[in-house]
Image (cartoon, rainbow, N blue to C red; front, side):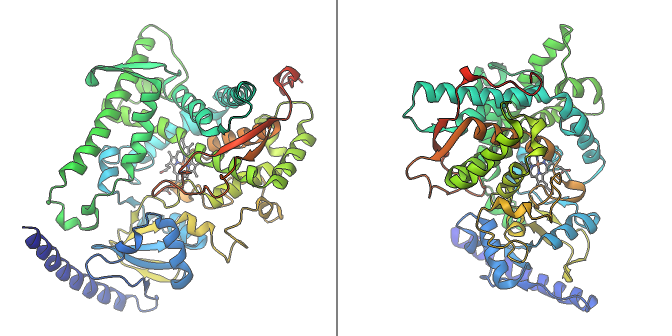
Length: 512
Ligand code: HEM
């Protein structure tokens, strides 16, 4: 049985490849002034899949760019993937040729978890996308919404600082797991923005259980991250979709079912509040009141989207920034001195960020070296097109390797080093959020860039103002990342020395 299946795979693939190459040859003939793509040599049938097994594709792609140039193609089973590793060509794909490369090609896991692309970040570029992007920008992530929601961010930073003080005071010799504190507060902010309030627990009838806040975080964020990177081998051989992969599919569907049940229960709680006459400035309030063309299921996914997107990438960036500062005491000291100069006795808040260019440089350099979205979810070319002077046949998948763009030696000297100073050399506008490729570009540019930078910069600045950070013993080499992501695999453990104590309270900006 297994041998028959294997033979079927070999036969089907040979035919497919023959067809594929004939087609490619024919198309190249029609576009003779364009160069053909370099192909990374692989094996028959599986292509380059075996070379990606270390599960850090962004790093493997960047390594291949050194041999094959910034634009090349690989094969993942039956698919041709064009990999882009230079900011110029990535921008060409995301901006100039966006209309030809605007659809998503999602792996099956993401298809299931996003309820068939029913969210801003994963939908195709169509009317639905334009409408829901407008919704999330106007109500949560755009400049005026972020202004209205400022208190949530101030509270987050204040709470993390206070909890760290208390922890250090109670257990001075303990190493501090920063992530535990920050993740909890960031999740509180996500819930407040999405639902209107933080939540202690929720009764979920469909699961027959009441979930604690930690369990809600697991179902809505951690399990989803886990599910999103579960690879289904059928993604690489689309013509074998009919072969069952039940255990895998059951697992992903269970994640999606629990996510939907919990989000629906959270929305139901808010419906009761609204029915009792209490309106809040939340995404749920807006969607229930105004988004009349959306179904209940669509609203459920969109509310969940606002939660998961707030709760993840900002954490990754802030933790890596504090790791790098703790590892580089002289850079931490420079930042502290600049904060001191600008803030004096005041607590650092968002209002100070623009006056401390080194703080922005720390943030952008961290995004560059540890891009939280290392590879943009795959898109595909709907029509023959070109990128960087290369011919791109219709049907190719396009992988924009943001990590590769940010590691380009032609753009950044010593790209593997963490050097915030590189963003202070006058080439960059201090206020520009898009100095690196970390937030993408063009019509699909990150909608949350403003929020991520406000939270991360205020938190980094305030926590360096309040504490001296050092890595705990053995932490320096603890740089492994979780599976396909750039999440630090093990939380950073640091020793913290308060620079002053809460008794010596600083006035905040408004009090000063
Ligand atoms: C440091 C933090 C973050 C980074 C590095 C980041 C990165 C990205 C990137 C690279 C994309 C573009 C994907 C593409 O071109 O297809 C993207 C899209 C998006 N991001 Fe972020 N993101 C961050 C934080 C956030 C936050 C905090 C939110 C919301 C709370 C958010 C919401 C979105 C949305 C809604 C999109 C989809 C935009 C569209 O498709 O039109 N992001 N992000």
